[in-house]
Length: 256
Ligand code: FPP
Image (cartoon, rainbow, N blue to C red; front, side, top):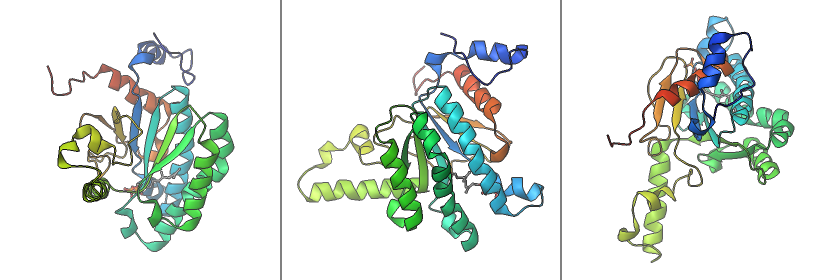
């Protein structure tokens, strides 16, 4: 069934065609985004890097609204990686304030849109103000049944896999599990993403074409989509283009 999208000008024939082509049932369930290029966006404008992150945060709001409008099941955003601690302290401090600022500003709207906030990553490694803001948002939205906004904060895929392995070994040592219990499905239960489907589509902005330690296990069969556009400039139209391109892909999962 064609889906009616709120973002298209009726006069634009090309866009109308694209709209007609988007099929609701063929939309990805779970989209993951590596929001890259904030620093370059700021540099191009002679602004400090943090100004790019601020603009990037505003853009998160735009894309969350769009994803919720498409009735996607989940949107996972790579907001801070385990490697991002290597950045200058002032930038790290700023990045750690953004989830708080985002959630404090937009929480009422997220609640109203039935969005459920979740996070993946090492929560205990985050500053208290970041944890508090996230806990509050999770609590306020826990009963919501719409889009899952999954924020990857202090997330690294290798770390996630290692921690999962440790938890499994602990269960074995405690006598609750044995090696025979380990299979792809049961292992997935030890990951941060245990309640989520694997991402169907992974978008990376800013021209870089790598996964950067993001959802390595979960994206085994994910469709990858890259754009040169920097994250603060990635708008609803481009998001729609990514979804439309995704619908043209043939997913074979190793079959023929
Ligand atoms: C990478 O771009 C971006 C980040 C490390 C931070 C991404 C964070 C946001 C977009 C805001 C987070 C918002 C919420 C809601 C938590 P970069 O700065 O490395 O770009 P560059 O490669 O151009 O330097």
